[in-house]
Image (tube, rainbow, N blue to C red; front, side, top):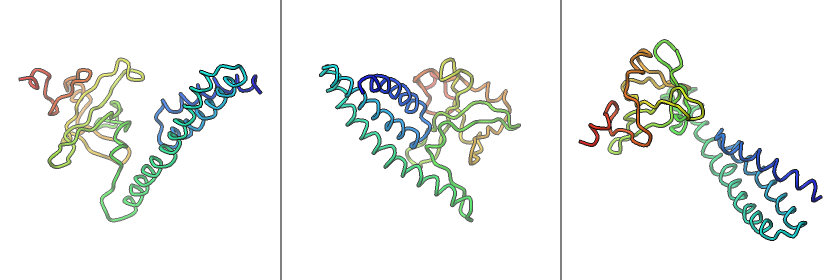
Length: 198
């Protein structure tokens, strides 16, 4: 049993880490915590059978944390996600305006007016007084966030489709928008860092 647990523990931990880090929705993240739980139980068995009380204590605690993760992601968060999806689907079948989840903006593909892919949305900034979207931050180029270019696209320049965002202009228009600095986004789309400080 110790040998099996010694293999299961690292494999389960690595798989679970990939599942949760991928951020592919509540269900995948929740099942990642299930796999993490299998891994922490296996590590506990290794700790118990080898007399490593520190390994046993650490993974006993991690098992409790993983169970909370299962409850959160396969319970509450999954219910929120399912509720948003059901409202989206119901709106497409009714006379009401078509809806999509605000959390769904992050990761949505962004295209120019001809349908060419520009990148993906990473965040939407919303004004406090009226709840309207001021601008959407779009990531282009790069891999996994490394070497990416971020640009703020004003709400007025965007069409919100159900499964993508469309910049109502050309690729050249998009690429001429000022690039955003890491961690320093403007109060208004098109504002430069110097203008924000003045």
